[in-house]
Image 1: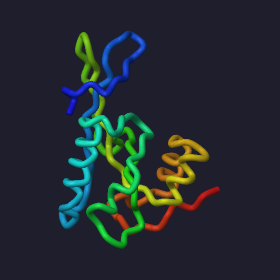
Image 2: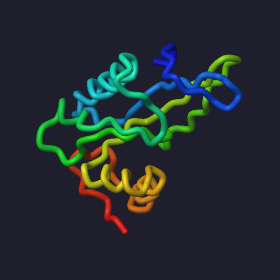
Image 3: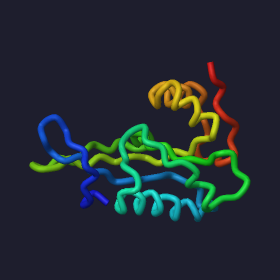
Image 4: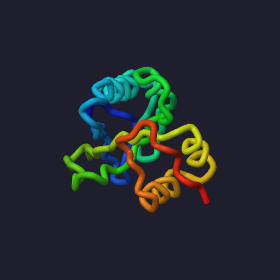
Length: 137
């Protein structure tokens, strides 16, 4: 995916490019399709992608009756992955993190940084697509 220009640049003028990654239990095999749909949305320019971006209702396309409906892109906290820098572009890995409708509403009102902080404080089980919402302050 990093070969596609997402029309974002760093201050030095180099292109910002992304690779999307995810972690999912083996039994959630449709999750690979979720990630592929995210990639296609970026390639076909229906979405852009950077930290804090949300792809709404994308999980509903592959899973029925789950609490998590959306994908938010975050820094890949599970792995120590550095940006890859070239002269003309920088490639950043973004991790697809499932979020609920209530968490999306919180993000819209408070920003992705505060939502991520709640995730860390409450140590959410991001593998569980039926996990309860975080407790909002």
